[in-house]
Amino acid sequence: MATGEESAVYSAHDLTEREFPMRYAFRCLGAVLLTGLLTIPGWAHGARLVREVSIGTFRLSHFPHSVIEPDMHSPKSVAFTPDGRLLLINALEAGKTFAFETGTWRKAWQVSHAFPASEQARHEALIPDNLRQYFDFPPKARAWTGKPVEMAITPDGRLAYVTSYRKNFDPHGHLASSVSIIDIAAGKLIASLPSGPIPKSPAISPDGTRLVVADWGDNTVSVWELGKDGLPRRLVNHFAVEKRLNVSGLTGNRDVQCGYCLRGTTFASDGKTVLISRMSRNNGLDIVDAVSGAHVGFLPDVPTSLRHLVCTRGMVYASSSAGKCLASIKEATLLSPRQKPRRENWRVRKADSGVRTIAVAGDVLVAALHGRKEIGLYDAASLAPLERLPTAAWPVGACVSPDKRWIAVTAQGHHGSGGNMVAVYRLEDDRQPTVVCSLAPVAEEKYVNRLRFAIASLQQSLALVFN
Image 1 (cartoon, rainbow, N blue to C red):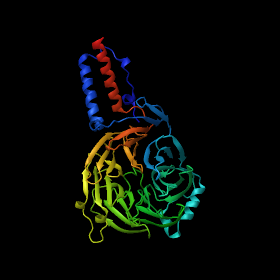
Image 2: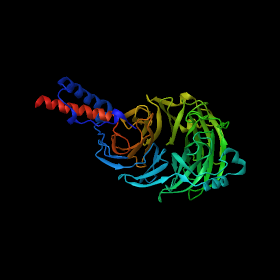
Image 3: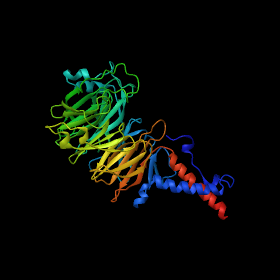
Image 4: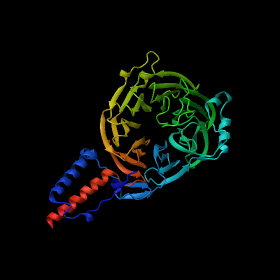
C-alpha cells in the first residue's frame, strides 16, 4: 500500500507564486505531456484509458465512482464464470473469495475459507490407506482458515475449486493444506478436499471428470475423480514428482524453498493429458495421465522457469517470471510421440519484466507484467507486442471473460507498496483496453499523484501569468 508522499493528495489551492515561478510552469507542462505519452500509450491508437469505479476501503479521489470493499486484501487470482455473469476474486490475506456481477460490478457474495476442526476427520476419511504417507495432518485436529490462492471452475459453472496456500496455523507450509469447494450460484462454501503443502494451480478436465492439483510445497500432485454433479468421488492418486521434498526443517521463505516449485497446471486438448511446469531446480514440464493418475513423462528442454500455462486452439502458451518472457509451442510438437521437443521449437518473446499470469482472448494474449506494473497485449500467433498499458502495482493475476469483452487484473502488492486492487478493462474492437472498474482499498498511486501535482502546478502558474 502506498505510504508517505506517495499517498498524499496535492491541491492547487496550496500553491503560491513564490513556489512556482514561470520556468516551473514549462517544466510542469513538459512533465504532463511526457507522462501522458509514457503512461497512456493507448492515446496514440485512439483509445481512452478511463477509470470509472473503484472498490476498496475508502474512496479514491481520481476515480469518478467508488464502492467500499474493506476486505480486498492481497487479491491473488481472478476468474470469470463460464457464463460470464460473475467475476470471482481470491483475496489471499483476507482468507476470502468474492463474486462481483459482470457489468454492474456489484458484489454478489463473499465466502470465508474457515473450517471447523471436525473437517480434518473428513479429510482423512477421503484418503486411501496406501496414500496416507503423503498427507501430514496435525496430531490434534484444529480449526483453520485457508489463504485462497488459485481456482478452477467446473465446465458447467456450478462449482469453484479454490486452493489454499496454507492453513493459518501452519506458518511454514509443512502440513497438508486444503482445496475449498464453493457453490457459485448459492455463494456458499460446501466442502473441502485435502492437499499437500502449498497447493497452487488446480485444473479441471474439459469433461469435468478430473481435478488435478499440483503442490508447490513438496513436489506432489493429486488427481481426483469428479462426479456428474462436479463433487469429488475419490482420490485416484497422489504421488511425488521424482522425489518428495522433506519439509520438516524448512523455516525460511517457502516461495523459494519449494523443491521443483510445481506451478502451472493445464489440460491438453485431449482432456486426458496434463502439463505441469517446474519453476525452480530441474526446470521443465511434467506430463500426467489424468485417467490413471500416473506421472508419464518429463520434458526438460523448455524455456527457463515457466510459471503459468494455457492450452488453447492447438497451442501451449507459457509465462516466465525469472526468464522475463512469453513462450509458445504447437501442442502437437510438444507432445509428439516420435521426438521430444527442443528449446528451439519454442517461440520466445522477451517482455522486459517478470511475467505472471497470462490469458488468451481470441488472437490476443494478455499478460500481467509484474515488474513494469503494466498489462501487456500480444499477438497470440507471433507473440509480437500490440500494446502495454499501466495498471496498479503490482499485477499478478489475469483473466478474460468468455465473450472476450472484459479483462481483469489483480494487483497483490510488493515490499509494502501497491496491491489490494483488481482492475477491470474493456477489450475494444481495436484491441485497446479501457479501464471501466477497479476494486481497490489502496491510496492514490504514486504516478497518478505526480501527474495531478504537475497539472495543479501548471494551472496555478498559468493563473499567475494571466492575472
